Length: 317
Image 1: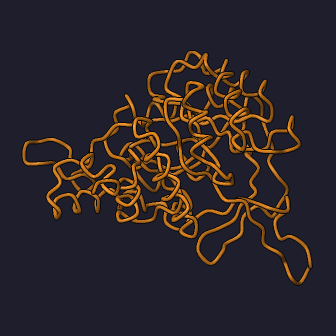
Image 2 (image 1 turned 180 degrees about the horizontal axis):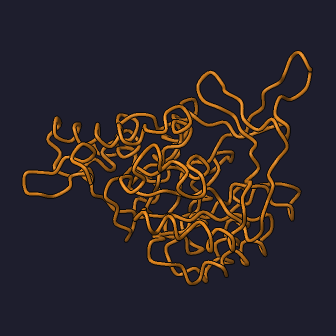
């Protein structure tokens, strides 16, 4: 890795090296699912092997077209989307896209989703013999459950538990990506851990809507959508803080409005082991490179020999 991205310590070590559970990463900066494509789409712009990991856009066991247009809209402090988890399906991705990621020496986090418990089980069956380049599988359980009138799986401890158990055949660590649209996120995270999740990703988007006042109807083709970007960062920080305070032993990946090294440090101090950059990738596809460089500088300026020393500092007296 270039010294322009990560400055080495005086002893030759990498001060940004970290881990999420038993997964070792070169730095705590990942690209969030749905913001960097299914494969090497951003490779002409950045070196994807330089980030801690690439979380690929969520895939189901089958091809899915997603929602009708329009599907994206800029908001004052972020954006709202109703992409609808469009994707080519796991079989196609494994055969045609995954090899390119492996050739590029990219650390990969696979993301899967489903509309039913059976969908997750079938997707998990396809993930039982993954190459070593895939370090973990993120379970996107923040999507509508058609078996429960469209209620998200992660909106109840029971359905969260069901999804985690239905994917137990996956051999690599599983991270449950949870929704902030609940009254007790700690309860949901606890249910995920008890069911066998190896970590949690906090948070997915906030439910929202934009009205086109000229057409007098919802602007997005699907009606409502998911709000992301800087506007939701305080919600994400609070979510990470509360879950870490209740369960400091469960690895947490923070996501929601990360756009600077300062944002990353805030998440780590709240209790996250690593972070994911989401909406900021749309505004600046090279943002991860600047954040990694700035993190190294911040550690040097503040005399932290390891980024890990920052984790959970906001909880200490």
